[in-house]
Amino acid sequence: MIIPTRRNRPANRRYPGRNRQQEKQQQHPNDINYQQRPRKQRPRVRTTVAPPPLVISNEVTSTLATRPSAPTTQQQMTAYDRTLQRQREKERNRQERKRERRQRMRQERLERQRKMREEKQQRKQEEKQQRQQQQQQEREQLQQQQPPSEPEALRQRAIEEQQKKEREQREQLDKQEKQQRKEQQERELERLKQQHENEERQRAKDDEALRLREQRLQKQRELEAEQRRAREELLRKQKAEQEEADRRYAAERAAEEKRLREEHEKRLQEAKSEQERQLQEAREAKRREEKAIEERLKEQERLRQEKIRREQQEEEKRLELERLEEARRFELRELERMREENERREALQRQREAEIAQREAEERKLAEEEERLRQELQEEEKARKRQLEQEIERAEQERKQKEEAEKAAAAAKAEQQKQKLEAAKRIADAEVAAQLEEKRRQYAARIGALSKEDQLKFIEMRKKRKQLRENQAKAREQKKLKRIQEAIRLNEMQ
Image (cartoon, rainbow, N blue to C red; front, side, top):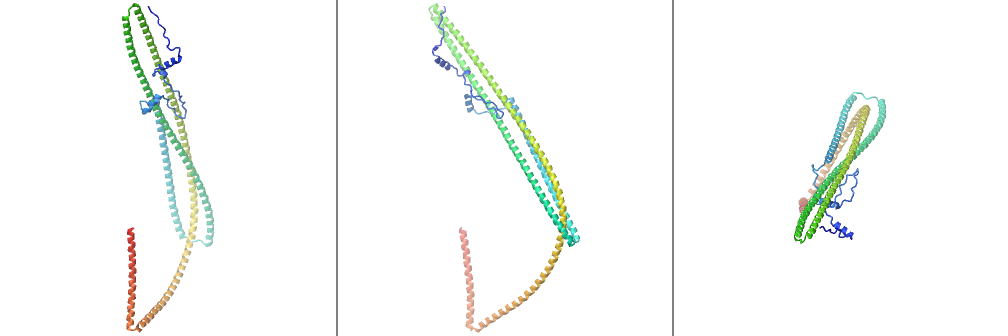
């Protein structure tokens, strides 16, 4: 006989708030349905900036803060990463070849300009030597010719002055034109130099931006790899904890089942009547049925959580693929922009080279024009030099004749003055000798008029005066020597 039991009603049906609180407390911490989902939405990837890293949870943040980031190895790189790396290597190699080609062309252009300057300087040196030789020959020819007449020389001088004025005017105009061309060329070169510097700075900025973008992508890949490892580690820990909990639950369930079975057998043994035995068996059957239902519900819940976990992993993979696709499109757009920028730079480089070639052609044309004008000026200069040399030679002859006449007159005048000076000197010497002789005679007469004693006193006085003068000179010398020694001593003390 089976006795029906009371239906399992919620113990707190009348208190929904307490029921919700108990349900909330019964949630397992490893349950995937109750984990906190990130609410912050990732911004969309723009065309000007790289995509930001994925939003990570608090657990992953703590894991990343305590563990250092490991570099991405070749095995961890995906096929898309390797493709991007090859593209970057190709672009870098192409830029390097382009830079080397530009440097080589610049060196060749500088070498050509240097050779042209050397050839021009050599031609100028040869022309200067030829002009000197020609002038020497003309001077030799002029020395053999006779000077022209005076009216012809005056007329030639007037023509030469007029030609000189015209030549000076032409030279002034040529100098002004050359200065203007030089200033224009300097301005053009300065403009091209500034443009080249701007392009170099822009190229350096682009290279720096490319390097920073590669570093940012590398850091992003490392961060994503670290996040992936953190998620895998978290899932592994959760799985291990779940397995451990399942094992503990299975062990507890087996122990509980064993205990209940032993109690049931014990109650069966202790049952005194058939009715109590049947009631006990009915209760045991109901308990087993409820246990089976509970196991079935737990299995269904586990399968549902596993399904939800797989769906979430698939969703994360889909989002990861979408992000990688967006990053790939962004990289392709950046590569296209860089290609267009390089094409524009190459076009500007070709245009600049064409301008340089055109300017070199203009410089050659100007050099030819200058050479023609220089030859004309040389012809005029030769004619003018011939006239000037003739006048200079005539003036030199006149000057020499005048100098010879002046020298002859000066020599005669100097000879006359010399004779006068010698005569005056002889007269003055005779007068001085007579005066000295007269003084000596008077002095001897005065001494002879004295007595012997006075003469001796006079001689002694002269000796004393002489000795006094000598003593005074010695005293002065000693004072001077003392001052010198004192100065030396003071200098040594300092």
